[in-house]
Image 1 (cartoon, one colour):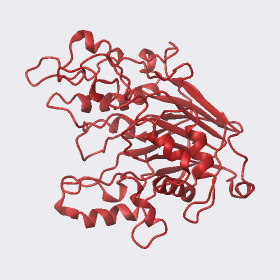
Image 2 (cartoon, helix red, strand yellow; image 1 turned 120 degrees about the horizontal axis):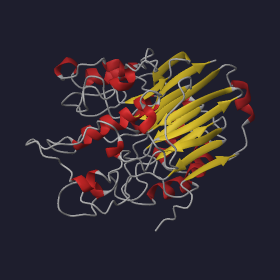
Image 3 (tube, one colour; image 1 turned 60 degrees about the horizontal axis):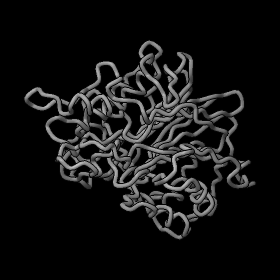
Length: 389
């Protein structure tokens, strides 16, 4: 069994700062980004092997996207948490080396840690009468750490709080899954044990000089792969709601972290919420109000909507108006489901209303644009946003 003595590791000084980077460092800008690399790895240790080789073509493309966009602070979703040196290997073997003609980029700090995916609950959570399946883990997964998270930063950062153990039933007015006949999907004893976060929710403080920003990262479960009880849709809604309540001192009193400390952010705190949130404002199978809990939150500045020409091109190639898509195709971040609703906006970088936004975008170049050859590395595309100060 993998030791869990150290749940989080902060690597400082992983590699020397490249001299070339000092010239490009902005005077008054920090670029935050999120990128679900969707490696789709099905066996424990596979990512470790590919990281160690330094020759994996998919990881080279992931690194090239990062080197092209050059975020200062980056959340990577679906980066399996396995060995404590995974972040170091990715930096040394891929990011520290030029990929596809792009300049190497240095991250002096990396953070990863345990997630709920693949951690067996000992319960029959998927209701098939057979405990021990991937669907019976606290978060769906075939092995512990699958679909994990990695945060990279060029500036000092520190994990402030983690919420892996927070129980779903401890959220007031939680969306408890219900069968069509009105009965509860989960037994009362199971419901009282369920964890809310399918991976984890992390509050990471990033500092640059006197500026302190809370980087609030997560990866809620997809609102699909369930039944009429919509248990995954309900969980997705409440995983997103967790951040909406956490940033509001009037609603956060019920929240407790893995250390037993209660409450959320102070009312004047600066923050950036990021991740593959698996919820589109108008399309797809998520609750119609799931992501609107953040997009319409008075403490969130959602005015800068990331756009790309590549997403518009993909929409045209997939049938355009023949699809049932209602949202603006230019704002899509996920490229899948060519025959139903089309692509969707499900990846977000959302700043607090007390931060100044300098710009935002989706790395999804259209045919003929620089970097288009990198867009097939994942069915998600990196979303970035610049904070000015």
